[in-house]
Amino acid sequence: MGRLLVLLLMLLLLCPPSWGRRSHSRHRHGHSRGHKRRVYVEPTASMLNVGKLHSYMKDDTVANPIFRVQPDSGRHKIVKKVVKPDSMVVWTAGMQYSWDMYRGIPPKKTYLPFNSVFVLVCGKGGNDRQVMAQFNTSKSWLNKGIKMPDYQLIHEKVKFNIVELCARKMRKEINESAVKGTALPPPSELLAKWNAELAAMHKQYELETANGSNTAAQQQWNMKISLMLSELSNYL
Image (cartoon, rainbow, N blue to C red):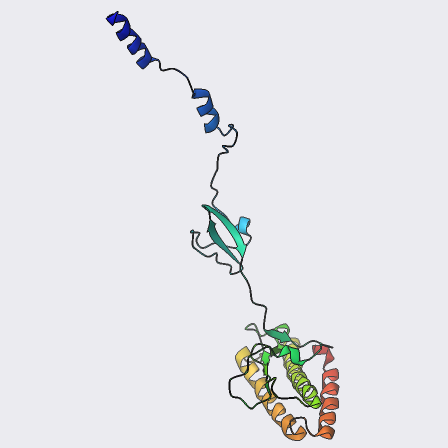
């Protein structure tokens, strides 16, 4: 009897029973119900559609600022970041200029009714298409505690038109230089030249119109700038 028990124990050790083998095999191959196999795939630039990825970590940020990768319960997902709208308004023909464009916050204890920020810009390439007249909405502000006279908005709109006028003159210079094959100064010097002319023109405009309160002079400047813009319509 003792020998039979020893033989049975040896058989069990050498040939273990196959109970549970089938279910274990199915689970391993992902066929069991409710037990799908998860495979981690390293994200690529084509998957994210954001260009080259410099690194990818759980708390890292993708090179492109529009997207970022965040951990979420052990997984990774792509979420859009909140991107602030551009605060620069480019001059366009027929645009509606209004006080609603003044979105900046006025400084405390100011007696000024408003502040307008106009910018003449030129790209590093010095291309005529990179020259623009812009209005900075975040730096321009309106003191809502002071009532504006009706003429003031028209006065500021013509200021913006003067910036566009200088932009067209600058585009004309770049274009004519390309046609003639003559060399242009570096973009920074070219921009400095036209910014100086813009400042001088704005100063003259303010003096002659008395900041818009001289109705007759304001009307003359309105017609003058409109005519000059029309003459340079090829450089819009």
